[in-house]
Image (cartoon, rainbow, N blue to C red; front, side, top):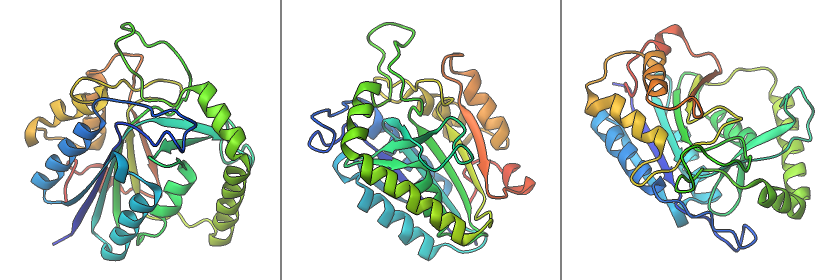
Length: 269
């Protein structure tokens, strides 16, 4: 029998001491993590939940690396994240990021580059299936959300991003170059197959909510306590239909997800 491990991260705030006094208060991210963990347990996953102060780079990467040690060909990792998203300038060239920006996950103690996520996934056996659901914004734009001032976006405001990047420029520039060199050394291996369903497009904002984020709320409604029957593409489209055009979830694949993997019912161990 395949093994399924899941990691669920939910951050209702970040450490203001690490973000220049900004605490990024949100409402529903911890609920998202708990609800996704409950879904995962019901589907047969052994789950780990990291909430707000535990959502640090060290704790999250330690959990991912422990999963990489345990999982082998045919097994599956489910990784969900609810919190803020952001961006930093990409210094490794347009081939890596055509928009010259690296998307980030805003962990409790610092921003975590999308290249770092990819590097963590490369630690897994090529036969491990990886599924990720990210309920955050990747645009980083300070925009006013449709629906009025009571709607909160899950993004690190652009002026704050610029300020933090200037403060930490050397760290992020060196990190990007180190990751790029590592990728060049490891060559063109595709790594394990990864299915990413994110809350919105890169130029959109993911909305927070009173109980769940808009994306997670739609996901849970479509899943309907396991009543959903369909594959990942069908699941993505059904979630998409429940959200407004201003928040259109994205389905993205890396590595080499087989047609069999994409055709599986979501959360199949």
